[in-house]
Structures are given as structure tokens and as C-alpha cells.
Length: 307
View 1 (tube, helix red, strand yellow):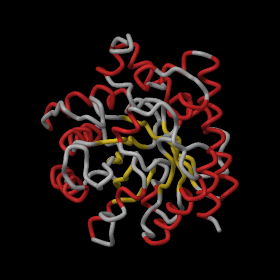
View 2: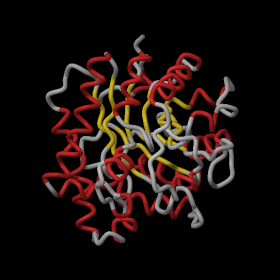
View 3: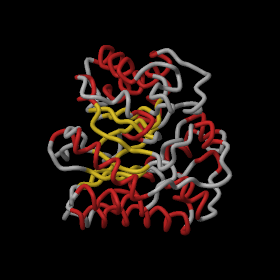
View 4: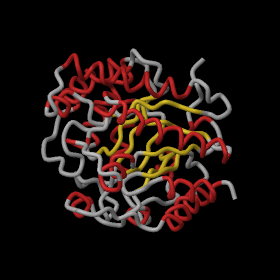
């Protein structure tokens, strides 16, 4: 029986996508191309992945929260994996291995609601989306990875850090072809607009119109809460947004790309801001940390969600 997704109940879910920045800046782990899926190939790499997943599930269990485990496959698509020396066969196997790895970690964790999300990302740089695709091109391109993920027992697909609603539409259509639940997470600039210049409201409307509202829900990720405070209101369209996976830093994407040190912000403030959003917008079900966050931020968030 398929596991219920977060938008189908009232329980909050924790998730975490800040692992790469934590590994690079605080643990000195080299991640060429910002890719974490090669970590699956070494004992040390698998130990890192295991630690992040088990820390998150343990925190969720202690806090009586659900948890979504995100796979290490955000850049495991054809072009970005090829730049790292992976051919079609190797990248396909990396996707399969990533989901199998999380599934094995989940198996003894029946005491909490644990979902495995197949994490996918844009074809090109999310923060400088200079190369655009048509819906047809995006559907064909992302079908390659999604077809592989459809062979796993992932509970859902999550398209993270999306900047172009046209590309996201193609992802949604590819997932729909395999009857896979999909969530689309948009990133925004410091003024609340997408890196491609449009608004969140328009992006969501565009995708829903083109796909008969197929996405299970939408999220905002890789942005500080201050960046979208003015646009995320009580307007009807925001009901489609069920998750916030926020950055610790108030810096812009350009500033973060050029940073030589990690800006971890204030973990207590981070937890309080997301808890306040949840209190104000009760439909928010998925909350977590993106760039610059670590277990301190998630612990502060969990404490405030359950207080």
C-alpha cells in the first residue's frame, strides 16, 4: 500500500537538503559538481549518508514528527553526471543505488512515518538558468532519470531548486507518465521572484494549468524565510504550497555561490521562523533545512514544532 503523502494528513514532516554545504564547508569533503551520489561508492561516503539519514529519523521519532529522506540524486541526471565521468549505464545505476540505500535504512523504522523521496534537479545551474527548454524538451530529458526512479520503491519524486516553470512542467509530465507522485520545490531570489524572473503564483498556475494540477503539492526551498515573506500570504494560491525547506543565510544566490565560508545564520532564529510560518499557515506540512543548515537548525525547528 502506498504511504500517505504529507498533504494527505495533519502531521508535520521534517526533511533536510543541506548536507552538501555542510560536507563541503564544515567537514572538508570534496563534492565535484555539488554531486553527493558518488558518496555511495565508498565506505566513508556511505557512512556520511547514513549519519545524516539516521540523525534525521531519530530526531523525527523523538519529536513525534514524520520524516522525508531525500536521495543523493539531485544532480544525477544525464548532463550533470556526464560532466563527472558517468555514462548512461553508470548514472542509471547510481539512481537505483541511492534509493535502495535509503530504503534499507528505512526498513527498521516503522515507529515513525518515513518517506523516501527521489530527489531530482534542473538540467542546468538552478541559480543561473540561462539555457531554457520547451515543455517537450524538458519532458524528454527528465524522463530518462524518472524512468529509472520509477523502477524503485521511492514514495515520491521531488524536483528541488527549480527556477523555470516550463522545465518543471516537463518533469511533472514525465512523472505523470509513470503514475509517480511528484512535488515541485521552487527557489526564489531575495525579492521573492524566481531566478527566471516570474512570480511563484504564476509558476504554480502555469504548471497546474498544463498538467491538470498533477503535482501533489509545491514547496519553496533554497531561500531564507525573509526572501519570500512578502509574497507568501493568505492568498488562495498559497494553499498549493505545503512545504518550506529554507536556507540558514539571508545571502542571495550569487553571494552564496561566491562564498568561501559557510553562513550558518542563527539556528534558534531559523527554527522559530519556520515554526511561526507553520503556525500562521496550517497547511504547511513539510519543513526543513537547505543550504547552511545542520542538525542544530533541525533540532531547533523540531523543538518549536512540538512545543
